[in-house]
Length: 205
Image (cartoon, rainbow, N blue to C red):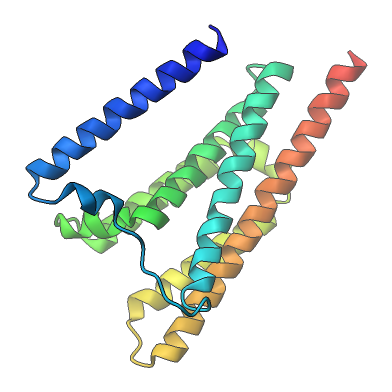
């Protein structure tokens, strides 16, 4: 398939999805302009600065793992390490989508208990750890565990609904930010080592 055909197909598919979304939006009683509503803006750049930084950090593992997987497929296809990188991209991508679109809030609004939503995410995360326990053992998984521990701590603080907003923001926001710093670093380091190993193996053969 030529690059021009690929671009045409990509744009046609995107146009079709946008058209479906517009129709669905109108049927739900909203305006089409609501789809292009700008996020909250403040003239002070410090407002939501760390929240936006957290969201940017959430995109790092997705991009790094996706790029690594596509590159690794051309070097050494069909290996367990490739599957690990692929599912890491899917897992972190799901977390990024949830963080941006607040999917868990919509799930609670639909009547699903918050505990049930938390258990669902815990099952997904545990399944990932179980199926790729061998691959994880060959990585500095302690960094990942530290990041996840900080994230769960932040979630726990959020569930307490502390009255003091300053204390609540610090106890939730700072661990959450550092959780993603560690998680992003972990996947960057793992993908770098994985590609170097694949390149050396391919070069020697």
